[in-house]
Image (cartoon, rainbow, N blue to C red; front, side, top):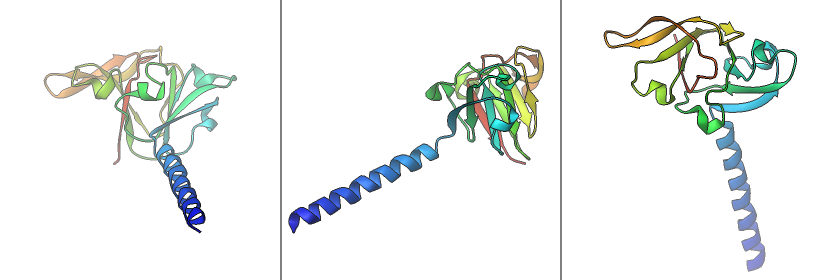
Length: 155
């Protein structure tokens, strides 16, 4: 009888640990898939594509970002994106050239509104640069293989 109770408790504990692992994995703000094209990017997500033209016609890494991330290295996504798509109906996503939202440094940022997409981050893009005066100013930025952190804002 005691063995049966111990076995039942062990199984219940194991089931609890399994579901805790699943829910913490589901709560991660970044997940990686393989794919290509804009259709691979889920609704209300920011997608960072490994290659230009949204990975073209060949499957490659896509990092799906759904929450603020101070260090993309945690998800093996730091400085790896060559194209980006913000598949959202509202709000904005800000991509930073440095970890931890530029660490207070005055560096490049790219702010995306819902629906914005850039097929090639090698190009000069209308972005922002930190400024001592007001925090940020318009600038031309190149963000290829430079995205290290991301924040989201809602309107």
